[in-house]
Length: 320
Ligand SMILES: [Zn+2]
Figure (cartoon, helix red, strand yellow):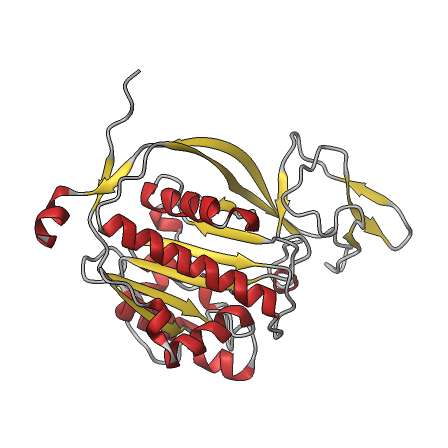
């Protein structure tokens, strides 16, 4: 009969909205450029919002990255590197961004980073959080789901331990990745810009409500937990020898059962999924993941109960 006590969090003072972490994912780049010139729609009364292009050289060339994938550079070993000399551009940039937006684990950094991405996969509207144990983040994505219900946002949790964090959002106290697809890299499409804009606005509205003392009651949330990445079948030379099966192409999030066709060879042979249970594949045939040897990612869907959350009392005192 008794419900869980509310989990409390300090109010948020600083939020960063990033585009161009990948320099050819155009929804966030387009919007971030707009907000840099016209910041008024990001304005809220209880916190500051800083729009930022995370990898300007890559944006200028409209490529994902110059030397290496920036959004895999926020690992403890890279962030603790001493020298800036002779380091790949994105390694240097990751260290700069960690100073600018963090540093990770500090009090003085951003309280929330919203990072905008596109995917060529048919992912629809994906809200990405690093951990479903952070109930500020779980309530934020739940609020976005309810508020823009027509978008059918799905929640992906990477479930990373601190030592395994790798992306730019992880330098802030709270994190939100917005991953919209399908969209070819280097292309900007109106409907995706509009969806991205609305989702970012809704996230900022959530922070504003939270800061003002709104309590968010306990609720349930369906989460897709990242399990592993699956490579394409390869021949003895290491070359891809089968493509995503046409019955699976564009069917991101939908159940994939053991034995379901997943790849197709040029000889017309179907290769079945060899997992031992039903999973939910995502990032199916994402073009940027060929180099990462990932044909798709496997997730499992779980329903979790979120405890109520509210602003902590220290925050209430501070605002009076
Ligand atoms: Zn991206």
